[in-house]
Amino acid sequence: MKKELSKHELEYIDEYQKNGYCCNFLFQDGALIETESKYSYQPDEIFIVAHHRYEGMSDPEDMSILYVIETGDNRKGTYLLGYGPSADLEAAEFFKDIPEKNYSANADINKLT
Image 1 (cartoon, rainbow, N blue to C red):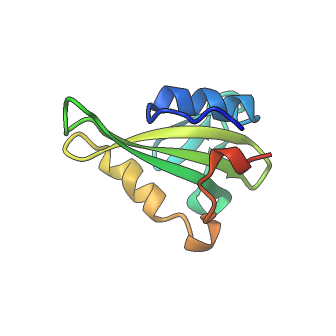
Image 2: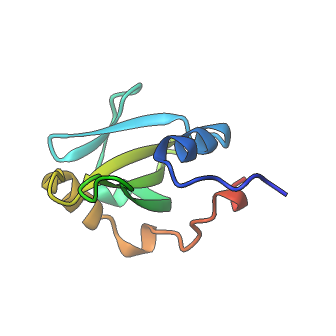
């Protein structure tokens, strides 16, 4: 049996990286950019393998969503998006524009290969 993860973003990011989700993405100028290749992805090129929502235990305004991403050209990584009062609204709109068919129903880290 695998050790169950606590609900901290960094622990999930570490676990996903161990499973090959090592690319880093940043949101800039209306696109999601892979930091190594500098390729700009549009919403239809992004596939969401899983997502995890977090709320800060001590600060309810400390909220984020960790997106586990695969791209149309087989890059794998994560993106952490803040939400709530301090959210980047443009980045949040970008993720809303990802087609529903590009979202996986599987959010169980233990089932990733």
